[in-house]
Amino acid sequence: MPKKSKKQKKQNEVNFTGGDMYVQGEISGLMRLKDKFFNKDTAFTIEERQLLGIHGLLPPVVRTIEDQVELCFMQFLDIDEDLMRYCYLIRLAARNERLFYKLLATHGDKCLPYVYTPTVALATLHAPYVFQFPVVLFITIEDKGHVYNVLKNWPQPDVRAICVTDGGRILGFGDMGLHGYPIPKGKATLYTALAGVRPHYCLPICLDVGCNNSEVREDPLYMGLKRKRPARAEYDEFVDEFMEAVVSRYGPNCLVHFEDIGNTDAFRLLTKYRFKYTMFNDDIQGAGVVALAAIASAANISNTKLEDHRVLFQGAGEAALGIANILFIALKTEGLDDNEARSRIWLRDSKGLVAYNRPQGHLSEYKLAFARKRAAIEKLEDCVREFKPTILIGVSAQHGSFSREVLELMALYNKRPIIFAMSNPPSKAECTAEAAFTHTRGKCLFASGSPSPPLVYAGETYHITQVNSLYGFPGIVMGAIACCISHLTPGVFIVASHTISSLCTDDDYHQCRLLPPLNKLTLCAFEIACNVVEYAYKNNLARRKPDPIDIRAFVKHQMYDLNYEAAIKTWLQEYEK
Ligand SMILES: NC(=O)C1=CN([C@@H]2O[C@H](COP(=O)(O)OP(=O)(O)OC[C@H]3O[C@@H](n4cnc5c(N)ncnc54)[C@H](OP(=O)(O)O)[C@@H]3O)[C@@H](O)[C@H]2O)C=CC1
Ligand SMILES: CC(=O)C(=O)O
Ligand SMILES: [Mg+2]
Image 1 (spheres, rainbow, N blue to C red):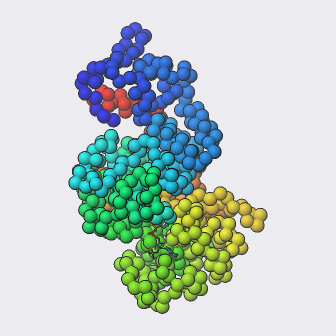
Image 2 (cartoon, rainbow, N blue to C red):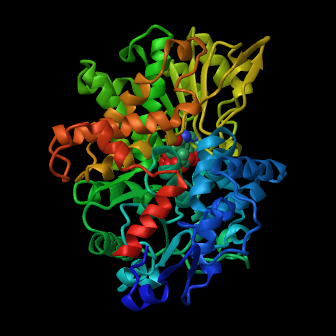
Image 3 (cartoon, helix red, strand yellow):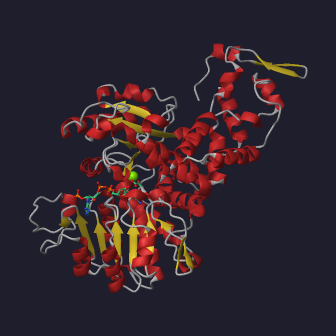
């Protein structure tokens, strides 16, 4: 909230004349209603309306926030088009932020898919239509040399968590350039909606470095720079400047979450920054957290140990390698040595099995770590025949690539084949829940990356688990900023993954749910935040001193308060300063 000058304070002085309250000043009542942090709409009491000079600007009805939520929910449900529902929620957030988050807290099961996966995918495809307010900060490569000045234009001075994309690999769509901007907005919204990070601490950013997808770039409605992405050196200089500007503006404790960055840049940036800044990459590390938790549940349901499993990945990019790496650590923790742990993991990319001696030549150092010392295998079916995986994970954005034959083979080799089609949005998923159940004759333990309705197969109803990083990153961000973590080590992600697994109940397993139900997402986020804080203090990663005595109270105290009174209190405190 911007500080008031003495002159402004004087002008806004609140006068009490007997019972009559009014406000003098040049800030009109309407402006007060337009302040999303402060606005309560019809929940302003008559006294508050008089005090603030907004009496008469609202109908005389005074509603509770609960009534407002139900009204908004009715309006939301009345909208037929998914994209229009998305726009409705964006507009509500821009008008009355607390009401928006209260709506998400009350009707998260219905509303979250419209601020996040899958509707956010539609928003990226229709970015020019949905852009209405400055909800994201755009920094272009033409701002190189004065990135700090652009950051300063963001109105909130106390930013603690940034979600940044460069649009390089938006979901399974590939390079969307600036039109990827709804992604960091959606992720930052979940920081607050699920983990209670105060919204003014959150800053979604889109770095516009150009776009290599000519279809997107040449669209007359394209809103970004009409140029191709720069060479690596120029890109790196720009991102380096961005990271330095973040530290200059918001301090070293400001966390930077990289999201949907193209594969060729994402690993390099993570390697370069992970111990220099407080940062992580959700597509690599966050995907690992949630997939490992779901694998642990699947092992539990099938009465097996992690080391009993062989995992074949369709895709060898960010998500695949992120999952493979955390799985490798988990297998080693179970007592396997490096070779044994690696032998449980096979990756298949666009050229076939990731193997040393395949004819296509060069493998990145990240793939090399898991490359097999054997002859190349091209087809997925042949990889399945050869390796006989117990777990098949799709992170390739190749729709339908878990063909009938692949799924039937999985069922042939396994009593309970474990199949995750994690690619987003559903149009890019490797298979549908229906295909997985049909072609494995109901034997599979299945999960998808986007939400899926319950499936009826052979007269039984199955809940479909959503293996999506939304189970992990909100709590990780909350925990990290609560204790001012210096950097996020692999241990942080293991702790987050174990926390998710620990929240699965026998009842969940009985229903073949591999993760807690979606109505426990806020619980997951809170427990992860507390466990990350505990881990950080134990491992000397927390910069915030002294150590808290009661970690749960420490985290709770820092969470966003959904009651309007909190807004008034904050506003009055600022006003008094
Ligand atoms: N559910 C979740 O939580 C998450 C889901 N995802 C989803 O996963 C998907 C992939 O994301 P990400 O890993 O970041 O993307 P990347 O671009 O980093 O990786 C994609 C991988 O798919 C491979 N690929 C492409 N075509 C084929 C093919 N025909 N057969 C086998 N492999 C193929 C690519 O091969 P090559 O290396 O040869 O180019 C590459 O290794 C996206 O749809 C994304 O939305 C991502 C993160 C989290
Ligand atoms: C979930 C996610 O981050 C993705 O699909 O890219
Ligand atoms: Mg992503």
